[in-house]
Length: 308
Ligand code: NDP
Ligand code: OXD
Image (cartoon, rainbow, N blue to C red; front, side, top):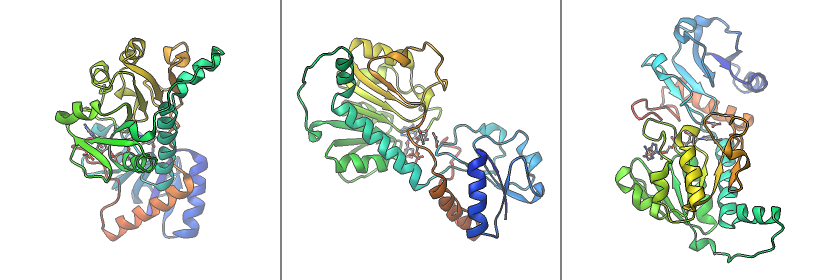
């Protein structure tokens, strides 16, 4: 089977060596090398080349090297081309770490204490037990579920929100637009792990913030365009929100002088909540390739009608 890889070259070389050892029947060509382009069935990329089908006339599958596929322009891809996103344990574990760290930091008032430290102020505030802290996770997919499992294990009072109904042990689940209000009322720390779709673009806005308990905090690790930045700043200024951990922005990077850079109640990270881990990802990818060869459904196929 012939595959072309078009992303970080170093990872490509590592994956090429790994496949040569573990799956010598698979030929991985590193872009711009294409092998015999008319033999190529799969492309692994963050951004595919223009005129993808003219370049690879027999292409069947486009793999995203990341967990999201919103970076692809679906209108430029033929309807029968399968688009598959990355699901791999290293990426999931990275997100669990980031969400856990963020929730604990917010739960334990760390943005406030860092500000007090800058002001040389020694002032203790009451510590709430985790069981009395209500954490709500938007998005109950691969990453939301794994993060909730850890938060439940730590004793937080957890809730989740998804598009379709879910049943998760020790997590109060709500779904759909009609149940969003109830879910938000439960979320003192709101975590966003939603994919970017027409329905989630701009969802984190002033109207939504007003439905959270007063003084709630936000962890945004989904995609930048989901957040209305001005509404976040207004909610922080009014006290409706007390703090925010922001990993994804629009644009990325933020321009110099953007108010998020120096905001005392915002922790900003440069889209590093989680990253595809080369070693575990190639094993997961090979597993998916074997499924394809056996004629079984691959894991992580994007349903274009849903947008994720
Ligand atoms: P999944 O596709 O596995 O899960 C998506 C979840 O979101 C599902 O539970 C789905 O509901 C829910 N959802 C989608 N649309 C809506 C909606 N309109 N209303 C309510 N719920 C909705 O995705 P992953 O968990 O793998 O990843 C989630 C996102 O995390 C990625 O798309 C990406 O944007 C982001 N990400 C960020 C990274 C970072 O470093 N910051 C790294 C990796 C990913 P249902 O269960 O009903 O289908
Ligand atoms: C991803 C990401 O989707 O890095 O993997 O955000």
